[in-house]
Image 1 (cartoon, rainbow, N blue to C red):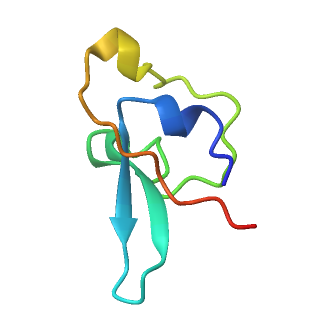
Image 2 (image 1 turned 30 degrees about the vertical axis):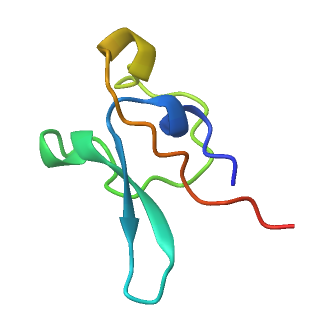
Length: 68
């Protein structure tokens, strides 16, 4: 799944449902209601974007697996 900017943003998190579905959540939504909790993907522009490399985040979750 192509997530756009979210996949490499320090503010993203993955949520897994009881049925195994995975959803990308924007953690900025807890601090600022201007950000959607579950943004429509792919996100191509975002004022809250900070790359994981810039933040020094150790999160290495690759997100959902690609389906063939």
